[in-house]
Image 1 (cartoon, rainbow, N blue to C red):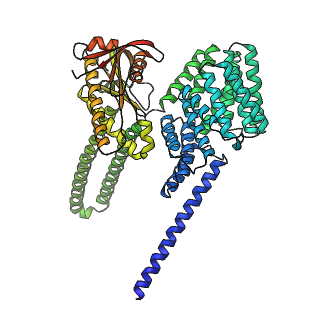
Image 2 (image 1 turned 45 degrees about the vertical axis):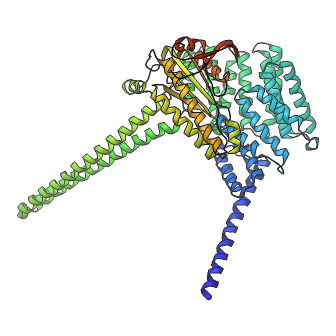
Image 3 (image 1 turned 90 degrees about the horizontal axis):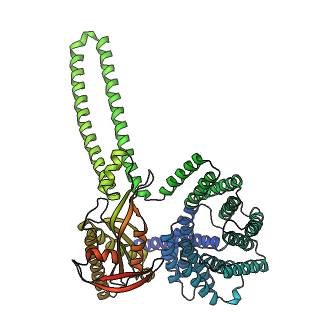
Length: 603
C-alpha cells in the first residue's frame, strides 16, 4: 500500500515539475512576443531569428495558432532584413494562412506589411500595390493611425513610384507625411521624410537640381530626427546611403565616399551583406567618376568577392572541414615522428652510459626500433587510406557543385574562365499550387514534397546529360548543351521536360487518391546563346547569364499548367522529333508578343 502511494506521489510531483517547466517556457515566449509588439528587436538579426523560432516552437506545442501567426510575421521580416527573400516569403504566407478568428485582426495587418515588404524586395510592385490597397479597404477606423497603417500607405506609395506612376506616388508620399505629423509619431515622421527624399531623388533623374534640392532637404530632416533616436541602426544606414547617392549626383564624390563609408560601417555591424555589396558598388563608381580607376577596380573586386560570399556556404565549408582534418592528421604524424626521434636519442644515451650491458641494450634498441618502425608503417598506411578517402569525398562534393570539365579546369588553373556558348537550351519549371500547399501542410512536409520532385528532376537531367543550374524557391532551372556543346541539346531538354511533367502528374494522382493537396507544374523552354561559368574565388556556383535565360523564364510564366511551352527557336530544332501545337503569338512580360508552341509527345 505504501509503495502504491509513493508511486502516486512521485508521479504527481513529476507532473507538477513538467507543468512548472511548461509554464516557465510559455512565460518566456510571452515576454518575447511582448518585446516584438513594442518593436524592441535586436540588431543582431541572427540572434533574433533563433529566439523568435524558439518562441514559435513553444506556441506550437501549446497549439496557439494566433501567436504562431504573429511570430511568423516577425520571422518573415527578419529573413527579409537578412536578404533571405525566398524563406521570408514562404514563412510570411504561412503566417497569413494561420491567421483566423479569434486572432487580433490588427496584427494581421502587421503581417501584411511584412509580406508586402518582401514583395517590394522581390520587385513584385503590382502584387505589393494590390495587397496594400486590399488591406487598407479592410482597415477598421477604430484602430487609428499607427505603424501598420503607415506601413501599408508607404509600401503603396513606393510600389506606385517603381511602377512609374510618379504623380500618384508623390501625392501618396505627401499623405503619409501629413498623417505622420498629425499622429505626432517621431518614428513615422522620420520615415516619411526619408521616403519623400527618396521620391524627389528618383524624380530628379540624377540631374534636376530643383528635385535634388528637395530630396536633400527631406533626407537631412530625417537625419536630424534619427540622430536622437537610433544613430547606428538600419534607418541611419539607409539615410547615409541616400545622402551618398545625392552627393554623387551633384558631383561631390568625396562627400559621397564619406557618407558611403558611414553606411558601410553600420551595415557591417548589422551583418547586412546585401547592403554592403550595394555600397561597395557605389564606392567603385565614385572612384571611377573621380578618375581613380585603380581604386575603382579594387573596390569592384571587393564587391565581387563579397557578393560571392552569399552563395552556397555550406558546401564549401565541407571542403574546408576536410582540408582541416587532413592538416590535423598530418600534424599528428609529425608529432609521432618527433616522439620516435626522441626515443632513439634516449636509447643511444643509455647505451653510452651503460657499456657493461651493451649487448642487452643493443638488443633492446633493435627490438624497440623494429616495433616503432612497424607502428610507423601501420600508421602511415592508415593515414594514407584516410587521406585518400577524404580526397575522394572532396572530389565527389566538388563534382556535385560544378560540372566535371569546370571542376578539372578549376583544379588545374585555380580559376575557371567564363564561356560564351552559342547554342544552349534552357529549361524553367514552376509549381502552380505551391503557395496554396504551403498553407495546408507543415514546413517539414512541404520541404519533403519539394525534395521528392527535385530529386526526380535531378535523375532525369542526369539521364539526358543536362546540367542542373539551381533551384530558387519552388522553381527549377537546368540547361542542355553545356559546358560541352552538343547537337542534341534541344531534343534532350524537351524529352526531360516531358518526363518531369509526367513525374508531377503521377504525384498529383497519388495525392488526389489520398485526399491530400498536390503540385501542378508549368514548364518553359528556350534555345539561344548564354555566358556560363563561375565568379569569385570562394563558395563556387556554376551559373549562366544572358537574354536566353530571361526568355526561357518567360516561356514558363506564359505557359499553362501541365504543358511544356517552347519558343519558336526551340521548335525549329525539335519539330521533326515531336508533335507540337502552335499557340500563336502570345504576350510575354518584357518581351512583347512571341510565337509559342505546346509539345504533345515524347521523342
